[in-house]
Image: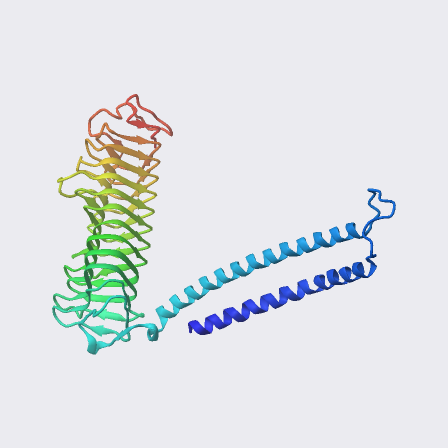
Length: 436
């Protein structure tokens, strides 16, 4: 296939060169005719008899014109070389993209092709592409694929690894390896974990759709680093399974993912440098949870819908969570809190442009939390719109209405001067420009 692509690339390039050469050939003929005419007219003596310095249009002047035109031609050749280089670069990119798509779609490009008879399977060497040729079912306590080598690609090719609701089943497991890619398929009805990784560096999980039974988990990352999880979903039939996505890792990004019916949709513990973008948690006890010694975590445009608590730092106060950012997030219809920072050990918190509507409480900040709440909206929350008991966390430019209590300071007096209105400011500066 690659040879075919290379031949097509060569034909395309030769066609381009022929067309370009033809377009230049006409001009080159003109130059040659001009040179011929000049040579015919050249006298034996190149110097005027009167030995003056006047330019009378003699041969030296004509030769200068010819040299200028030859110089112009050299510039055209340089442009042609640059065009060829650009075309070669673009064709190389197209070839790489096509090869990757072929790898996704055609099991024939794989080093190992698995069927039901090959399960459970353990990798045998590094640097292999492993493809699933049919959907398979696991027996009790089986792990479908165990990755024990570096640089492995697992392509499910749209097929399913089915745990059969059998106890102890794990779809894919990996530990102490580097560079693992899992993509394009389904892992369902597992009772332990769909994907379990321990001490793996360099991870890419893409387009994997999971369903978990009972106390199982979707994707679990323990002591892992440097990776991306993209366009993955984890669903349960009830909110008793443990986690949609569990991460105890660093330097990771999760985007466009969905967790539904989990105990905790996304659980970040002892993590650092993590970004969740456009992720959703539905019908969880806690939609997004970060705790213990987590730091530099960003939730951007994430949604918690109909959870017990939408976003929370609930957990063991062994250490402190630091540099937590919620930007443009939404928490709707939570039975307790939309966004809650309750441990009192969170530092450098930033909640910006978030919306908490129709929860019991919208945004709740406990005493001793440091940070800011800026540009947020709380509407229709049963008990409180925005509650802030911390004198080290400012609330600025926020809007609350139709709540049980729009703004509450837990009796600290921080908002004692705030009255309903489109724009109100109190003298403490902990609350400013907040209004109903």
